[in-house]
Image 1 (cartoon, rainbow, N blue to C red):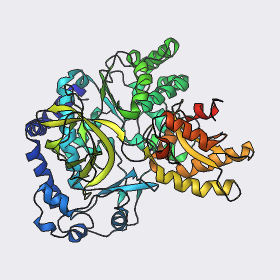
Image 2 (tube, rainbow, N blue to C red; image 1 turned 90 degrees about the horizontal axis):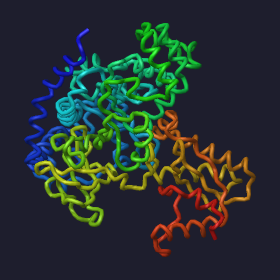
Image 3 (tube, rainbow, N blue to C red; image 1 turned 30 degrees about the vertical axis):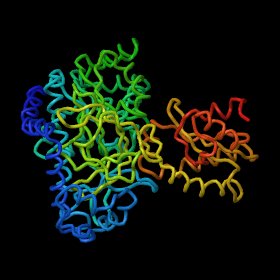
Image 4 (cartoon, rainbow, N blue to C red; image 1 turned 45 degrees about the vertical axis):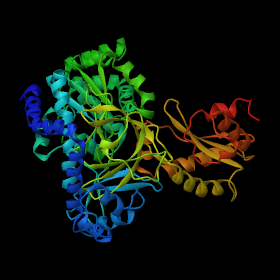
Length: 553
Protein backbone atom coordinates (compact mmCIF):
# COMPACT_ATOMS: atom_id res chain seq x y z
CA UNK A 1 0.00 0.00 0.00
CA UNK A 2 1.26 3.50 -0.85
CA UNK A 3 1.91 5.40 2.42
CA UNK A 4 -0.51 8.21 3.28
CA UNK A 5 2.41 10.65 3.54
CA UNK A 6 3.37 10.04 -0.09
CA UNK A 7 -0.21 10.32 -1.33
CA UNK A 8 -0.89 13.48 0.66
CA UNK A 9 2.39 14.95 -0.51
CA UNK A 10 1.21 14.43 -4.06
CA UNK A 11 -2.15 15.96 -3.19
CA UNK A 12 -0.41 19.01 -1.74
CA UNK A 13 1.59 19.43 -4.95
CA UNK A 14 -1.59 19.18 -7.03
CA UNK A 15 -3.24 21.91 -4.94
CA UNK A 16 -0.28 24.31 -5.17
CA UNK A 17 -1.23 26.20 -8.38
CA UNK A 18 -4.74 26.93 -7.13
CA UNK A 19 -3.36 28.01 -3.73
CA UNK A 20 -0.94 30.41 -5.43
CA UNK A 21 -3.73 31.99 -7.50
CA UNK A 22 -5.80 32.39 -4.32
CA UNK A 23 -2.92 34.10 -2.50
CA UNK A 24 -2.53 36.54 -5.37
CA UNK A 25 -6.27 37.23 -5.40
CA UNK A 26 -6.22 38.18 -1.72
CA UNK A 27 -4.24 41.29 -2.68
CA UNK A 28 -6.75 42.29 -5.39
CA UNK A 29 -10.25 41.23 -4.26
CA UNK A 30 -12.06 43.69 -6.53
CA UNK A 31 -10.48 42.18 -9.65
CA UNK A 32 -11.03 38.63 -8.38
CA UNK A 33 -14.69 39.34 -7.73
CA UNK A 34 -15.17 40.86 -11.17
CA UNK A 35 -13.86 37.60 -12.65
CA UNK A 36 -16.34 35.66 -10.49
CA UNK A 37 -19.23 37.84 -11.66
CA UNK A 38 -18.25 37.34 -15.30
CA UNK A 39 -18.15 33.57 -14.76
CA UNK A 40 -21.60 33.60 -13.11
CA UNK A 41 -23.07 35.63 -15.97
CA UNK A 42 -21.64 33.18 -18.52
CA UNK A 43 -23.16 30.26 -16.62
CA UNK A 44 -26.63 31.84 -16.56
CA UNK A 45 -26.58 33.07 -20.17
CA UNK A 46 -29.06 31.29 -22.41
CA UNK A 47 -31.27 30.16 -19.53
CA UNK A 48 -34.90 30.94 -18.74
CA UNK A 49 -33.64 32.95 -15.79
CA UNK A 50 -31.52 35.18 -18.05
CA UNK A 51 -34.51 35.74 -20.34
CA UNK A 52 -36.52 37.12 -17.41
CA UNK A 53 -33.88 39.75 -16.55
CA UNK A 54 -34.21 42.89 -18.71
CA UNK A 55 -30.97 43.74 -20.44
CA UNK A 56 -29.17 40.68 -19.06
CA UNK A 57 -26.83 40.49 -22.05
CA UNK A 58 -25.57 44.03 -21.32
CA UNK A 59 -24.66 43.39 -17.66
CA UNK A 60 -20.92 43.60 -17.04
CA UNK A 61 -20.23 45.49 -13.81
CA UNK A 62 -21.38 44.83 -10.26
CA UNK A 63 -23.63 47.91 -10.05
CA UNK A 64 -25.38 46.95 -13.30
CA UNK A 65 -25.90 43.48 -11.86
CA UNK A 66 -27.36 44.88 -8.62
CA UNK A 67 -29.72 47.19 -10.49
CA UNK A 68 -31.03 44.53 -12.88
CA UNK A 69 -31.30 41.42 -10.69
CA UNK A 70 -33.58 41.17 -7.64
CA UNK A 71 -32.46 39.56 -4.39
CA UNK A 72 -33.56 35.92 -4.18
CA UNK A 73 -34.31 33.58 -1.27
CA UNK A 74 -34.72 29.82 -0.87
CA UNK A 75 -38.47 30.23 -1.30
CA UNK A 76 -38.29 32.45 -4.38
CA UNK A 77 -36.40 29.83 -6.42
CA UNK A 78 -38.64 26.87 -5.52
CA UNK A 79 -40.67 26.98 -8.75
CA UNK A 80 -37.53 27.00 -10.91
CA UNK A 81 -35.97 24.19 -8.91
CA UNK A 82 -39.07 22.05 -9.30
CA UNK A 83 -38.99 22.55 -13.07
CA UNK A 84 -35.39 21.36 -13.09
CA UNK A 85 -36.33 18.38 -10.91
CA UNK A 86 -38.89 17.10 -13.43
CA UNK A 87 -36.37 17.33 -16.25
CA UNK A 88 -36.86 20.78 -17.79
CA UNK A 89 -33.52 22.02 -19.21
CA UNK A 90 -31.83 25.43 -19.09
CA UNK A 91 -33.94 26.85 -16.28
CA UNK A 92 -31.41 28.61 -14.05
CA UNK A 93 -28.25 27.91 -16.06
CA UNK A 94 -27.28 26.89 -19.53
CA UNK A 95 -25.42 23.85 -18.20
CA UNK A 96 -27.26 20.76 -16.94
CA UNK A 97 -27.76 20.03 -13.24
CA UNK A 98 -25.75 16.95 -12.23
CA UNK A 99 -27.36 16.49 -8.81
CA UNK A 100 -29.34 18.19 -6.07
CA UNK A 101 -28.19 18.65 -2.49
CA UNK A 102 -30.85 18.89 0.26
CA UNK A 103 -30.88 22.14 2.19
CA UNK A 104 -33.20 23.93 4.60
CA UNK A 105 -35.52 26.65 3.33
CA UNK A 106 -36.99 29.50 5.29
CA UNK A 107 -40.58 28.39 5.31
CA UNK A 108 -40.96 24.85 4.04
CA UNK A 109 -39.54 21.47 4.86
CA UNK A 110 -36.58 20.59 2.67
CA UNK A 111 -35.21 22.49 -0.32
CA UNK A 112 -33.08 21.16 -3.14
CA UNK A 113 -29.99 23.08 -4.24
CA UNK A 114 -29.06 22.45 -7.90
CA UNK A 115 -25.42 21.50 -8.45
CA UNK A 116 -23.69 21.93 -11.81
CA UNK A 117 -20.13 21.07 -12.80
CA UNK A 118 -19.43 24.79 -12.92
CA UNK A 119 -20.61 25.17 -9.31
CA UNK A 120 -18.37 22.27 -8.25
CA UNK A 121 -15.51 24.11 -9.91
CA UNK A 122 -16.25 27.10 -7.67
CA UNK A 123 -16.12 24.85 -4.61
CA UNK A 124 -12.71 23.64 -5.81
CA UNK A 125 -11.49 27.25 -5.95
CA UNK A 126 -11.91 27.40 -2.16
CA UNK A 127 -11.21 23.82 -1.05
CA UNK A 128 -7.90 23.54 -2.90
CA UNK A 129 -6.13 26.47 -1.17
CA UNK A 130 -7.64 25.45 2.16
CA UNK A 131 -6.31 21.91 1.84
CA UNK A 132 -2.94 23.10 0.56
CA UNK A 133 -2.44 25.40 3.54
CA UNK A 134 -3.42 22.70 6.02
CA UNK A 135 -1.01 20.17 4.51
CA UNK A 136 1.76 22.77 4.29
CA UNK A 137 1.39 24.45 7.67
CA UNK A 138 0.59 21.27 9.61
CA UNK A 139 2.83 18.59 8.06
CA UNK A 140 1.86 16.12 10.81
CA UNK A 141 -1.52 15.84 9.07
CA UNK A 142 0.32 14.20 6.16
CA UNK A 143 1.61 11.41 8.42
CA UNK A 144 -1.55 9.29 8.35
CA UNK A 145 -5.12 8.82 7.09
CA UNK A 146 -7.93 11.31 7.65
CA UNK A 147 -11.58 11.10 8.62
CA UNK A 148 -13.77 13.57 6.72
CA UNK A 149 -17.43 13.72 7.65
CA UNK A 150 -18.79 15.44 4.55
CA UNK A 151 -21.63 13.18 3.43
CA UNK A 152 -24.39 13.04 6.08
CA UNK A 153 -24.47 9.74 7.92
CA UNK A 154 -27.52 7.60 7.31
CA UNK A 155 -28.81 9.71 4.45
CA UNK A 156 -30.36 7.69 1.67
CA UNK A 157 -29.77 8.70 -1.92
CA UNK A 158 -32.66 9.26 -4.29
CA UNK A 159 -33.64 10.73 -7.65
CA UNK A 160 -36.08 13.41 -8.75
CA UNK A 161 -38.96 12.61 -11.14
CA UNK A 162 -36.65 13.80 -13.91
CA UNK A 163 -33.95 11.32 -12.89
CA UNK A 164 -31.50 13.77 -11.28
CA UNK A 165 -29.63 12.29 -8.27
CA UNK A 166 -30.32 13.82 -4.86
CA UNK A 167 -27.34 13.91 -2.50
CA UNK A 168 -23.68 13.10 -2.96
CA UNK A 169 -22.49 9.54 -2.44
CA UNK A 170 -18.81 9.95 -1.58
CA UNK A 171 -17.15 12.31 0.88
CA UNK A 172 -14.73 13.38 -1.87
CA UNK A 173 -17.54 14.57 -4.17
CA UNK A 174 -16.78 18.26 -3.67
CA UNK A 175 -13.15 17.86 -4.71
CA UNK A 176 -11.92 17.79 -8.33
CA UNK A 177 -12.75 14.51 -10.03
CA UNK A 178 -9.12 13.65 -10.82
CA UNK A 179 -8.27 13.86 -7.11
CA UNK A 180 -11.16 11.76 -5.82
CA UNK A 181 -9.46 8.35 -6.22
CA UNK A 182 -6.40 9.67 -4.38
CA UNK A 183 -8.53 11.08 -1.55
CA UNK A 184 -10.41 7.81 -1.21
CA UNK A 185 -7.08 6.06 -0.51
CA UNK A 186 -6.26 8.35 2.42
CA UNK A 187 -9.70 8.29 4.04
CA UNK A 188 -9.77 6.18 7.19
CA UNK A 189 -13.45 5.33 6.64
CA UNK A 190 -14.60 4.03 3.24
CA UNK A 191 -17.16 6.22 1.48
CA UNK A 192 -19.51 3.23 1.15
CA UNK A 193 -20.22 3.44 4.90
CA UNK A 194 -22.45 6.44 4.17
CA UNK A 195 -24.78 4.08 2.28
CA UNK A 196 -25.88 2.34 5.48
CA UNK A 197 -29.62 2.91 5.98
CA UNK A 198 -29.63 4.25 9.56
CA UNK A 199 -27.51 6.50 11.72
CA UNK A 200 -26.68 4.00 14.47
CA UNK A 201 -25.31 1.31 12.17
CA UNK A 202 -23.42 3.96 10.19
CA UNK A 203 -21.91 5.31 13.41
CA UNK A 204 -20.90 1.83 14.61
CA UNK A 205 -19.20 0.88 11.33
CA UNK A 206 -17.49 4.27 11.24
CA UNK A 207 -16.11 3.58 14.71
CA UNK A 208 -14.83 0.16 13.62
CA UNK A 209 -12.69 1.71 10.90
CA UNK A 210 -11.58 4.64 13.03
CA UNK A 211 -10.45 2.44 15.92
CA UNK A 212 -8.72 0.10 13.48
CA UNK A 213 -6.74 3.07 12.11
CA UNK A 214 -3.81 3.41 14.52
CA UNK A 215 -2.12 6.24 12.58
CA UNK A 216 -5.18 8.48 12.15
CA UNK A 217 -3.83 12.04 11.75
CA UNK A 218 -6.78 14.32 11.01
CA UNK A 219 -10.51 14.49 11.81
CA UNK A 220 -12.92 16.85 10.07
CA UNK A 221 -16.53 17.13 11.26
CA UNK A 222 -19.09 19.92 11.12
CA UNK A 223 -20.82 20.47 14.44
CA UNK A 224 -18.59 19.52 17.42
CA UNK A 225 -21.48 17.57 18.96
CA UNK A 226 -21.19 15.13 16.04
CA UNK A 227 -17.75 14.14 17.32
CA UNK A 228 -18.87 14.02 20.95
CA UNK A 229 -21.76 11.70 20.06
CA UNK A 230 -19.38 9.50 18.09
CA UNK A 231 -17.16 9.11 21.16
CA UNK A 232 -20.22 8.51 23.36
CA UNK A 233 -21.22 5.66 21.05
CA UNK A 234 -17.70 4.27 21.32
CA UNK A 235 -18.11 4.18 25.08
CA UNK A 236 -21.52 2.50 24.88
CA UNK A 237 -20.52 -0.13 22.30
CA UNK A 238 -16.86 -0.41 23.25
CA UNK A 239 -16.87 -4.02 24.40
CA UNK A 240 -18.76 -5.13 21.33
CA UNK A 241 -16.26 -3.31 19.14
CA UNK A 242 -13.39 -5.00 20.99
CA UNK A 243 -14.85 -8.39 20.10
CA UNK A 244 -15.44 -7.39 16.48
CA UNK A 245 -11.90 -6.06 16.10
CA UNK A 246 -10.45 -9.26 17.56
CA UNK A 247 -12.48 -11.47 15.22
CA UNK A 248 -12.44 -9.31 12.09
CA UNK A 249 -16.23 -9.04 12.17
CA UNK A 250 -18.60 -6.06 12.26
CA UNK A 251 -21.99 -6.36 13.97
CA UNK A 252 -23.95 -3.10 14.20
CA UNK A 253 -26.15 -3.49 17.30
CA UNK A 254 -29.66 -4.60 16.47
CA UNK A 255 -29.00 -4.65 12.72
CA UNK A 256 -27.00 -7.85 12.14
CA UNK A 257 -29.86 -9.50 10.27
CA UNK A 258 -30.99 -6.45 8.31
CA UNK A 259 -30.54 -7.25 4.61
CA UNK A 260 -29.76 -3.66 3.62
CA UNK A 261 -27.08 -3.40 6.30
CA UNK A 262 -25.60 -6.77 5.35
CA UNK A 263 -25.48 -5.74 1.68
CA UNK A 264 -23.34 -2.70 2.52
CA UNK A 265 -21.13 -4.66 4.94
CA UNK A 266 -20.50 -7.29 2.29
CA UNK A 267 -18.72 -4.65 0.19
CA UNK A 268 -16.37 -3.70 3.03
CA UNK A 269 -13.30 -5.52 4.35
CA UNK A 270 -13.02 -6.38 8.05
CA UNK A 271 -9.82 -8.18 9.04
CA UNK A 272 -8.79 -9.16 12.59
CA UNK A 273 -7.14 -6.29 14.51
CA UNK A 274 -6.05 -7.89 17.82
CA UNK A 275 -3.58 -5.14 18.77
CA UNK A 276 -6.15 -2.40 18.20
CA UNK A 277 -8.71 -4.42 20.14
CA UNK A 278 -6.29 -4.57 23.06
CA UNK A 279 -5.68 -0.83 22.83
CA UNK A 280 -9.43 -0.10 22.85
CA UNK A 281 -10.02 -2.37 25.84
CA UNK A 282 -7.27 -0.61 27.77
CA UNK A 283 -8.63 2.81 26.83
CA UNK A 284 -12.13 1.85 27.95
CA UNK A 285 -10.74 0.92 31.37
CA UNK A 286 -8.74 4.12 31.75
CA UNK A 287 -11.34 6.48 30.29
CA UNK A 288 -11.60 7.11 26.57
CA UNK A 289 -9.04 9.56 25.27
CA UNK A 290 -8.62 10.59 21.66
CA UNK A 291 -4.84 10.77 21.88
CA UNK A 292 -4.61 7.41 23.66
CA UNK A 293 -6.41 5.75 20.75
CA UNK A 294 -4.81 7.83 18.02
CA UNK A 295 -1.39 9.03 19.17
CA UNK A 296 -0.62 10.65 15.79
CA UNK A 297 -3.83 12.70 15.70
CA UNK A 298 -2.62 16.22 14.90
CA UNK A 299 -5.65 18.33 14.05
CA UNK A 300 -9.43 18.53 14.52
CA UNK A 301 -11.50 20.66 12.15
CA UNK A 302 -14.99 21.74 13.27
CA UNK A 303 -17.34 24.68 13.59
CA UNK A 304 -16.31 26.89 16.50
CA UNK A 305 -18.40 30.05 15.98
CA UNK A 306 -21.92 31.16 16.88
CA UNK A 307 -24.15 28.40 18.28
CA UNK A 308 -21.55 25.69 17.64
CA UNK A 309 -19.29 27.28 20.27
CA UNK A 310 -21.47 25.70 22.97
CA UNK A 311 -20.44 22.24 21.83
CA UNK A 312 -16.68 22.80 21.44
CA UNK A 313 -15.88 22.24 25.14
CA UNK A 314 -17.18 18.64 25.35
CA UNK A 315 -15.36 17.75 22.13
CA UNK A 316 -12.15 19.35 23.38
CA UNK A 317 -12.31 17.32 26.61
CA UNK A 318 -12.48 14.09 24.58
CA UNK A 319 -9.37 15.13 22.63
CA UNK A 320 -7.17 16.93 25.13
CA UNK A 321 -3.92 18.05 23.53
CA UNK A 322 -5.14 18.00 19.93
CA UNK A 323 -5.23 21.31 18.05
CA UNK A 324 -8.65 22.51 16.92
CA UNK A 325 -9.09 24.62 13.81
CA UNK A 326 -12.41 26.37 13.26
CA UNK A 327 -14.07 25.84 9.91
CA UNK A 328 -15.02 28.56 7.53
CA UNK A 329 -18.59 29.30 6.51
CA UNK A 330 -19.63 26.69 3.96
CA UNK A 331 -23.26 26.35 2.93
CA UNK A 332 -24.88 23.82 0.64
CA UNK A 333 -25.26 26.66 -1.84
CA UNK A 334 -21.62 27.75 -1.80
CA UNK A 335 -18.42 28.55 0.10
CA UNK A 336 -18.33 31.91 1.88
CA UNK A 337 -15.07 31.70 3.86
CA UNK A 338 -12.21 29.28 4.38
CA UNK A 339 -9.92 28.95 7.42
CA UNK A 340 -6.30 30.12 7.39
CA UNK A 341 -4.05 29.52 10.40
CA UNK A 342 -2.67 33.05 10.75
CA UNK A 343 -5.81 34.97 9.79
CA UNK A 344 -7.94 36.74 12.45
CA UNK A 345 -10.99 34.85 11.13
CA UNK A 346 -11.79 32.71 8.08
CA UNK A 347 -11.03 34.62 4.89
CA UNK A 348 -13.55 35.32 2.13
CA UNK A 349 -13.48 32.72 -0.66
CA UNK A 350 -12.78 35.53 -3.06
CA UNK A 351 -12.20 33.34 -6.14
CA UNK A 352 -15.24 31.09 -5.67
CA UNK A 353 -18.46 33.07 -6.08
CA UNK A 354 -19.63 36.68 -6.41
CA UNK A 355 -20.48 38.15 -3.00
CA UNK A 356 -22.48 41.11 -1.79
CA UNK A 357 -22.96 42.24 1.80
CA UNK A 358 -26.11 43.87 3.13
CA UNK A 359 -25.65 46.36 5.95
CA UNK A 360 -28.38 45.48 8.51
CA UNK A 361 -28.45 49.11 9.64
CA UNK A 362 -29.10 50.28 6.06
CA UNK A 363 -30.96 47.43 4.35
CA UNK A 364 -32.36 49.77 1.70
CA UNK A 365 -28.88 50.74 0.43
CA UNK A 366 -26.99 48.93 -2.31
CA UNK A 367 -25.15 46.00 -0.72
CA UNK A 368 -21.42 46.49 -0.37
CA UNK A 369 -18.84 44.53 -2.32
CA UNK A 370 -15.95 42.56 -0.87
CA UNK A 371 -13.40 45.37 -1.18
CA UNK A 372 -15.78 47.87 0.46
CA UNK A 373 -16.27 46.16 3.83
CA UNK A 374 -15.27 47.86 7.08
CA UNK A 375 -13.49 46.27 10.03
CA UNK A 376 -15.80 45.63 13.00
CA UNK A 377 -19.03 45.92 11.00
CA UNK A 378 -21.59 43.16 10.53
CA UNK A 379 -23.19 42.20 7.23
CA UNK A 380 -25.67 39.72 5.76
CA UNK A 381 -24.28 37.63 2.88
CA UNK A 382 -25.72 37.56 -0.65
CA UNK A 383 -24.31 34.89 -2.95
CA UNK A 384 -24.27 34.52 -6.74
CA UNK A 385 -22.95 31.24 -8.15
CA UNK A 386 -22.46 29.38 -11.41
CA UNK A 387 -25.13 26.98 -10.15
CA UNK A 388 -27.69 29.63 -11.05
CA UNK A 389 -28.46 31.23 -7.69
CA UNK A 390 -28.31 35.00 -8.20
CA UNK A 391 -28.09 37.50 -5.34
CA UNK A 392 -29.21 34.68 -3.06
CA UNK A 393 -29.78 35.65 0.57
CA UNK A 394 -28.13 32.96 2.67
CA UNK A 395 -29.39 34.48 5.93
CA UNK A 396 -25.91 34.32 7.50
CA UNK A 397 -24.59 37.23 9.53
CA UNK A 398 -20.82 37.83 9.48
CA UNK A 399 -18.52 40.33 11.17
CA UNK A 400 -15.32 41.72 9.65
CA UNK A 401 -12.44 40.84 12.00
CA UNK A 402 -9.59 42.06 9.80
CA UNK A 403 -7.99 41.49 6.42
CA UNK A 404 -5.49 39.25 4.66
CA UNK A 405 -4.01 41.44 1.98
CA UNK A 406 -7.04 43.49 1.01
CA UNK A 407 -9.56 40.66 1.44
CA UNK A 408 -11.87 40.64 4.50
CA UNK A 409 -11.76 37.97 7.20
CA UNK A 410 -15.31 37.18 8.32
CA UNK A 411 -16.49 35.56 11.52
CA UNK A 412 -19.86 33.79 11.37
CA UNK A 413 -22.16 35.35 13.97
CA UNK A 414 -25.28 33.26 13.40
CA UNK A 415 -28.43 33.42 11.33
CA UNK A 416 -29.59 36.91 10.39
CA UNK A 417 -33.13 35.83 9.65
CA UNK A 418 -35.72 34.34 12.02
CA UNK A 419 -34.09 30.93 12.18
CA UNK A 420 -33.06 28.95 15.25
CA UNK A 421 -29.96 26.86 14.60
CA UNK A 422 -28.51 24.99 17.60
CA UNK A 423 -26.79 22.12 15.81
CA UNK A 424 -27.60 22.72 12.15
CA UNK A 425 -31.37 22.10 12.27
CA UNK A 426 -32.19 25.52 10.72
CA UNK A 427 -35.66 25.84 12.23
CA UNK A 428 -37.45 28.84 10.73
CA UNK A 429 -40.13 30.86 12.52
CA UNK A 430 -42.43 30.63 9.49
CA UNK A 431 -42.11 26.85 9.54
CA UNK A 432 -42.85 26.69 13.27
CA UNK A 433 -45.95 28.87 12.85
CA UNK A 434 -47.30 26.59 10.12
CA UNK A 435 -46.70 23.51 12.29
CA UNK A 436 -48.29 25.01 15.42
CA UNK A 437 -51.29 26.27 13.46
CA UNK A 438 -51.88 22.77 12.11
CA UNK A 439 -51.09 20.66 15.18
CA UNK A 440 -52.38 22.62 18.17
CA UNK A 441 -56.06 22.98 17.21
CA UNK A 442 -56.16 19.27 16.47
CA UNK A 443 -54.70 18.47 19.88
CA UNK A 444 -56.82 20.91 21.86
CA UNK A 445 -60.35 20.62 20.53
CA UNK A 446 -60.17 22.99 17.60
CA UNK A 447 -58.44 25.98 19.22
CA UNK A 448 -54.89 26.96 20.10
CA UNK A 449 -53.97 27.32 23.78
CA UNK A 450 -53.96 30.82 25.26
CA UNK A 451 -50.18 30.93 24.95
CA UNK A 452 -47.97 28.74 22.77
CA UNK A 453 -44.30 29.17 21.94
CA UNK A 454 -41.38 26.99 20.90
CA UNK A 455 -37.89 27.85 22.15
CA UNK A 456 -34.52 26.09 22.37
CA UNK A 457 -32.75 24.90 25.52
CA UNK A 458 -29.06 24.05 25.87
CA UNK A 459 -29.42 20.69 27.56
CA UNK A 460 -27.79 17.34 26.92
CA UNK A 461 -28.64 17.03 24.09
CA UNK A 462 -30.04 20.45 23.07
CA UNK A 463 -33.78 20.38 22.38
CA UNK A 464 -36.86 22.52 21.90
CA UNK A 465 -39.52 23.10 24.53
CA UNK A 466 -43.16 23.76 23.73
CA UNK A 467 -44.55 26.23 26.24
CA UNK A 468 -48.34 26.01 26.57
CA UNK A 469 -50.90 27.76 28.74
CA UNK A 470 -53.86 25.41 28.92
CA UNK A 471 -56.03 23.52 31.40
CA UNK A 472 -55.82 20.32 29.36
CA UNK A 473 -54.44 17.20 31.12
CA UNK A 474 -50.72 16.42 30.96
CA UNK A 475 -51.12 13.60 28.45
CA UNK A 476 -52.70 16.06 26.00
CA UNK A 477 -49.65 18.31 26.24
CA UNK A 478 -47.38 15.33 25.65
CA UNK A 479 -49.39 14.32 22.59
CA UNK A 480 -49.15 17.86 21.22
CA UNK A 481 -45.37 17.96 21.68
CA UNK A 482 -44.99 14.58 19.96
CA UNK A 483 -47.14 15.72 17.02
CA UNK A 484 -45.11 18.88 16.60
CA UNK A 485 -41.85 16.95 16.76
CA UNK A 486 -43.10 14.61 14.04
CA UNK A 487 -44.12 17.54 11.85
CA UNK A 488 -40.78 19.30 12.30
CA UNK A 489 -38.98 16.09 11.33
CA UNK A 490 -40.38 16.55 7.82
CA UNK A 491 -37.64 19.14 7.41
CA UNK A 492 -34.34 17.65 6.27
CA UNK A 493 -32.00 19.41 8.70
CA UNK A 494 -34.22 18.99 11.77
CA UNK A 495 -34.77 15.30 11.00
CA UNK A 496 -31.07 14.74 10.43
CA UNK A 497 -30.15 16.39 13.75
CA UNK A 498 -32.74 14.27 15.55
CA UNK A 499 -31.56 11.04 13.90
CA UNK A 500 -27.96 11.75 14.86
CA UNK A 501 -28.95 12.41 18.47
CA UNK A 502 -27.57 15.95 18.26
CA UNK A 503 -31.06 17.24 19.02
CA UNK A 504 -33.51 15.86 21.55
CA UNK A 505 -37.31 15.59 21.08
CA UNK A 506 -39.76 18.40 21.69
CA UNK A 507 -41.11 18.37 25.25
CA UNK A 508 -44.12 20.32 26.54
CA UNK A 509 -43.92 22.71 29.50
CA UNK A 510 -47.10 24.03 31.13
CA UNK A 511 -47.01 27.75 31.90
CA UNK A 512 -49.21 30.17 33.85
CA UNK A 513 -50.08 33.63 32.62
CA UNK A 514 -47.90 33.02 29.62
CA UNK A 515 -48.32 36.37 27.88
CA UNK A 516 -47.44 38.40 30.99
CA UNK A 517 -44.52 36.18 31.83
CA UNK A 518 -43.29 36.39 28.25
CA UNK A 519 -43.45 40.16 28.32
CA UNK A 520 -41.57 40.32 31.63
CA UNK A 521 -38.61 38.38 30.28
CA UNK A 522 -38.53 40.26 26.98
CA UNK A 523 -38.23 43.49 28.96
CA UNK A 524 -35.48 41.94 31.05
CA UNK A 525 -33.70 41.06 27.81
CA UNK A 526 -33.70 44.72 26.80
CA UNK A 527 -36.85 45.14 24.68
CA UNK A 528 -39.21 48.07 25.14
CA UNK A 529 -42.68 46.98 26.20
CA UNK A 530 -44.24 48.69 23.20
CA UNK A 531 -41.96 46.82 20.80
CA UNK A 532 -42.65 43.31 22.14
CA UNK A 533 -44.48 41.07 19.71
CA UNK A 534 -45.75 37.55 20.40
CA UNK A 535 -43.81 34.86 18.56
CA UNK A 536 -44.26 31.17 17.85
CA UNK A 537 -40.48 30.65 17.85
CA UNK A 538 -38.16 32.48 20.22
CA UNK A 539 -34.48 31.82 19.55
CA UNK A 540 -33.29 32.77 23.03
CA UNK A 541 -32.78 29.80 25.42
CA UNK A 542 -33.59 29.94 29.13
CA UNK A 543 -37.36 30.09 28.92
CA UNK A 544 -37.90 26.89 30.92
CA UNK A 545 -36.19 28.35 33.97
CA UNK A 546 -38.08 31.61 33.53
CA UNK A 547 -41.52 30.06 33.21
CA UNK A 548 -40.99 27.55 36.05
CA UNK A 549 -39.09 29.76 38.52
CA UNK A 550 -42.18 30.76 40.50
CA UNK A 551 -41.15 34.41 40.28
CA UNK A 552 -43.10 35.18 37.15
CA UNK A 553 -46.21 37.40 37.35
